[in-house]
Image (cartoon, rainbow, N blue to C red; front, side, top):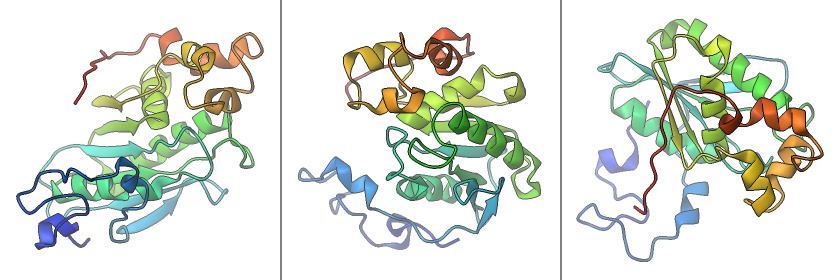
Length: 219
């Protein structure tokens, strides 16, 4: 794969000449900044959304495979494209990397439980991929942060080396009651906690034991 722009001498969007963040950087730029194409894209199911992008480093220097689960409030308009620069950065740092796509609410089979089933299927396929044979670490942001934290508590996740949930929605019931993401959680789980208690019990990381700890901050 080709280096990301910062490593090829070009300045990244929103980064000043000294490598710091420009004052006028719009955080939403991350949704439109795209890395070069992946090494390959591999299907783990029959649906067009059941794929993962593989990015391989020029030389593997890290003994872990990074599996990225993108965010975007589980909405169909936000796909793995906006996580491509993150994935490429991991590959440039020496990690074999897979960026997972999954069905979201509003797509055939999306929402709960289909979205969770896709994450399970994708992680299982990645672990069988000969180019991604190192122990996996799951990294998810926002909705992806919920999905990787949920995954950590599942029996099929035994053997994961770690899970990193970045701004993950880890208490879905509280998020639904307080309107996090508007109706995103309600659309994802088919209603409020009183409407779909089984879905919340199954999907909510806060309702299951998962081997991790939470950190928060303002940076």
